[in-house]
Length: 421
Image 1 (cartoon, rainbow, N blue to C red):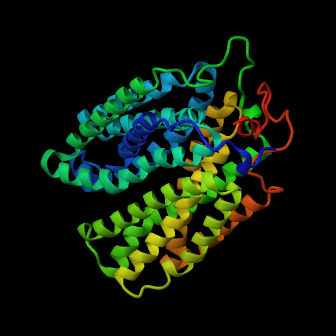
Image 2: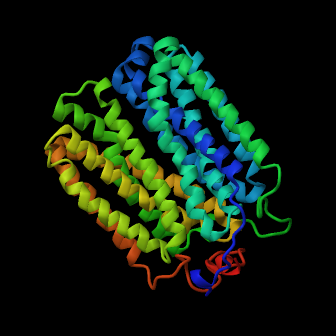
């Protein structure tokens, strides 16, 4: 197997235009749900319903997102990625416009569920497209930049929505998100004019299947992804409430701490992409980040010296946690191209389970033990994720499986692509 040091010193240029378009599309997809956060009370009043029912719209979005990604990944491997890359954001734009004009809770619920499905229809496919247009030792950085779009939704999207909404209301904000999604679709239309390798299944080639994609190493990587999303979600979902409860902050008062949290996520993702491409073993990089975040999680909720100290701990926690994600994504992308869309679609689906797990476990922990139980819970899940990463056999650059035949109808085993490069 070719080692990192024996690879050629030069690599193809990164497809920066495509990565920028993909980042914008991820930003639009994330904004489709997160920008509702500042307007829950306004939406409940406008739609004559209760606040809990409005809050439950996020669960509908998440479930639809995961289910659609499961189907879209396999569909992209069968029919090509471009229809999903362009059609998904356009359908998202139409769904957000539907939310804006709905006059009832039922109508809004239907359209936000559709928006979640549209987001799931292209986010995993974007990862597959970015992976197909880069060589193995570029994928950590490429996918890190793509995923930064989600963090930008927290850093820019939510505060921007709150400011814009003060002038045009929550319905107007949904129309703005629709405009961003349309711009993302046009950007992807332009940047994917040249076909990517493996963009469509060759005539006569065996059809990809979930059974072919779900090898034991892939299942382990997906389980690691669930653990990482639970650790991230426990803080992303509950940190604002923790600050309000502990330090008596208003909703406006948590803006700067949450922006600091988002900056930590972005910087950690960028650094994680660099490490995923430069260090010899991605699974060990993932494990180190998960063990590190577990260590920081212990004092995060239990030790409250000051607001600045707590925010600094949260920044460190999310920074270290975010370092893990690009290594995991690059490892998942290092599969035969015939099943790459399926695998990365399954990753989005498993991430949805991670978010639901964070909300479920976090809610239970909050009811039973309060916020003091969050640190040990995040630490336990982080350690389990790290152990999964280091328990898979001998370390190697490709984070791979040995031997052919793992994927029915997919000729190259894990690692062969990187070896050729």
